[in-house]
Image 1 (cartoon, rainbow over the protein chains, first blue to last red):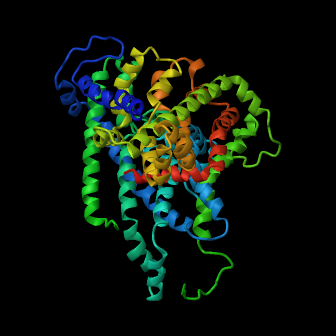
Image 2: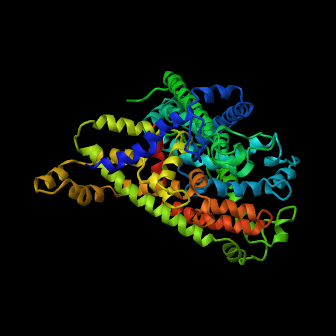
Image 3: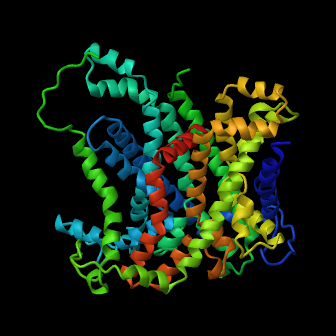
Length: 285
Length: 278
């Protein structure tokens, strides 16, 4: 049987853990002790009254609202620009795409230096035009926007590639016909190209929201959730609960409940986005 | 094509006004990291920043390399990445061939369930998967990073889609000549699928090489660290040696950057396919 090895692997490492994760969320569990008594829905009822969880959820909402629209709009304009046949286009594409190959940790090392409050190139550049100096990751109000800038740098290439692929599926004839009819380039873009990019936009909105809500690496490595909890996000909290001594390794059950609650939120968000999107987006058959 | 003759007010396209600043913004952090990695420590602590150090401190690289076990971390990462890429090529090809060509009971249900797992966020499965891997006594070994990732659904999906576009006639002819399914897969289907296999290989390589959360959870011992964990600990122990830190950072990024530039086409195709899966 050809599919068996893969199906078994996926069943063992994806489907079974999903079920077990739910069971864990109903237990008082630790990763060390095999003794896991059932506590019913206690872990779930605890979430709403947990100020750290509420703070993490709030931060996730703020991050998502900053990250998703700005990265997608930027990617749209860039993809249109990168779809032109002009000189240096290979260089431009490479410059936009290449952060895709850089790991989140390497990006973190890079941006902690770029945003260094004393010697960083960002403060120096902005200082030349009379702005700053900023505290970036070290300031409670600046940490979140800095995180957004850093992650846009890292993800822009991904979004742009998806838009570029969609743009290359837009038939030339349509734009040419519009040009013959005397349409300006802007109105052609607005009335023909943009609607045809609807499915790609919907996909990117859904996809970016999902990954924004699950932000972890950058927070763990760069800001550690700080300063003053300003960048503490759900997956970071889940990690600390389950895998670190901060909560005595004893909160794996609660962490599983939080993870499940987040999963449900993501599912609902995705369904709502698809439902709203499908009323606006037209798929060409 | 009929086009209005544009009045040329520039010797080059106006798009450069958008693209050049963007390209510079994207590249400046990386270029500055490289420059910093070639400076003396005193130069890194100079304000305004030194953008061109004058004399290059190439010795920062061997110093960074030998100050922590970068060689072990590189080897660990290469072992894990190679194992995961090869096993994915094998298992995903087999499964995809089954889904694309063979009729069997429960096929569409199985395929649906597989695709549904793409929706599962990592934090939901990470705690139970940790417990499974612990049961298998793989915590703190490279096996913890390999075994749960032997086959992934994205690869099955990508190859299934691709196999479906191949003409069946050739395979049927071989089958009539008595070739087994396995032989058809390895002799006919896979050689025709090299672009798709390359796409899967580079994307899987990228994911595995750069993965952070799962190694963070399962590996404690520095001798088992992957490059990402190693880079993190290097950052922790060399916060103030900015020049060495940046040299280490450049070394950690270099293999992936070279692969990306060499195989950009396949990366782009892989990412565009991730777009299609939604």
